[in-house]
Image (cartoon, rainbow, N blue to C red; front, side, top):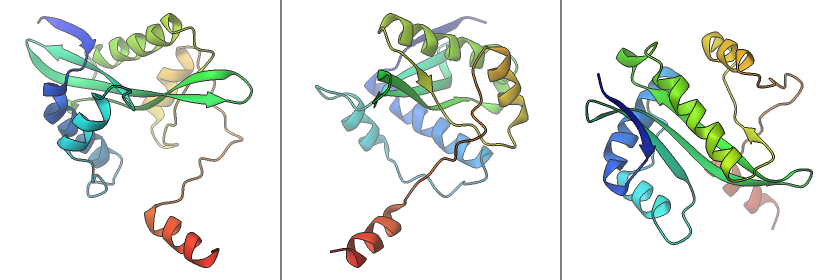
Length: 160
């Protein structure tokens, strides 16, 4: 089994979208993905890309990916957000997830970043245990706050 972790290319985006959809199903939100291959290609491969993606190939087939983007912390400066890290279900437990995670952390180090951050579902015990073993801090006193498209529209309409 030949495994390669590499920076994703535009032509990898159909496989990346498959993995995003697999993650959504794993997270019990199978119909939530509205992103398209075209969106991934446009936003990830323009002059100032909105994200970077790393892929895990096994024998030439993409079996996992990690998608990251820069954020800015008023306390720390430039940081990295790990949006998604997914390995196909049949390849979990083979070390691909760990290899992708290592690539993300190494990328942050090479970029001179002050922090890498991400969210994990409270029921994903396997991932939480992995992150804690790696030395990451799980911040249990913070809530993730989001406003979806409908909420944005309602808010703007109610607050002209």
